[in-house]
Structures are given as structure tokens and as C-alpha cells.
Length: 261
Image (tube, rainbow, N blue to C red):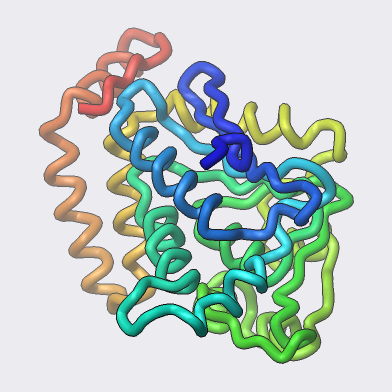
């Protein structure tokens, strides 16, 4: 398997993963899913890496699933993992990743590509990027968060609009609905995403991991249960070296040096 389908770079404490099938608009296939899973496992184990950026090469972030592999699934033996099984594993890996994940949308983002982006903790985009669910355009049903997750991230009526029309919206329009956090000039997206990642990487890794865990699970809890979860995490955090370092750095009027423990 060629690793060129997924480029892997390290900039300080930031890892950047670039989908690299530009001629196929970075459509997801089994090979790229396997590389994503492998690299994410590697990054998760490396304490020096604090934040992940996921982006694409060429004119698209990701145009969704490679339909040839979807169709090939119909010929698999009973019980054999198909494309949807593998995609579900990797998408869950991203959603539950212990470190912050930024999706940097460099171009066309549709179908499974939008679902992939929604696995990230935050989305930034190039000015020219377009976002669409698009499943309805091809008589296809979403299977990785289009109908299940999109309405949790933007107003329900806009989620229904995107799902049912298949229409593409600009990065600026999606920023207005809260899905995109920052819009950068096309030539400045890479630097903008890296600057955001570097800023986050200076924070306490253990605090960020616990914030992410509570925030991600809060939608499935009552307010009181979510508050209790937050308080339990705070009790744990009070015993960490990072908590003491933060207080000490504040008292000494210096930048904190967090170690993630």
C-alpha cells in the first residue's frame, strides 16, 4: 500500500494529515481509511503531538466515498467487513480522538467528506471551499452522520435544507450557521489552520482531553447529568500537575509549560 495517498507532516507539536488523491477529489477508499487509522493510532501514542489538522490536496477536501468500493461491497462474503464498516471505525476513531482535531477544508467538501469534517472538533475553511451533504443528488442515503449529526451542529431547518436539496453552500455561509469557525483566503488556509493548532497546542493536553470528553457527551445527557460529569472531571483535574503549573504560572506572570499529566 502506498503511503502517498495520505501525507503526514509534523510541525512542532502539530500533526497534519493530508488526503492525497486529488485526481479522485480525495474520495475515501479502503486504502486511505487504513492509512488514516494507522496514522491516528500513531499520533495518539505520541505525547509530543498535541493537535491534529486534517486537510486535502488539490481542489477538494473530500468528495465523499469512492462509489466503486461501495458497490464492491455487494460481492463480499457474509460477515466480511465492507467499506461502510471500515469507514464507521475510522470516523468513530476521529470523533473520540483524545487530542483536538481541526478539519481544514481546502475545497469541495460533500457527502462523506462533509461527514468526515464533522468528526473534527472544529472546522476552518478556505474562502473558495463549498460544503454540501449531496447524498440526495445521487439517490444515496447518508451513513456517517449526515442525517444524524448535522442537525446537532446547525439549526434543524438548515440541516434539512442541505439534506433534502443537496445544495452546496459557501464556507462563509456555513460560518454564518456555525459549522465553520474560521474562513481564510485560499492562500492563507494552511498557515491559518497551523496558527490555530499551535495556539491550542500550548494548552494543557489533559484539560483539553477532558473538556472534549464532557462536551462530546453532553448532547446525550440531561443538563444536570452533564454538569455532574463536568464536576467529576474537575475533581480529577485538581490533582494534576498541569493544574498546579497553571496556577503557578499565573502567580509568576509567565507562560505555563503544560506536560499533560
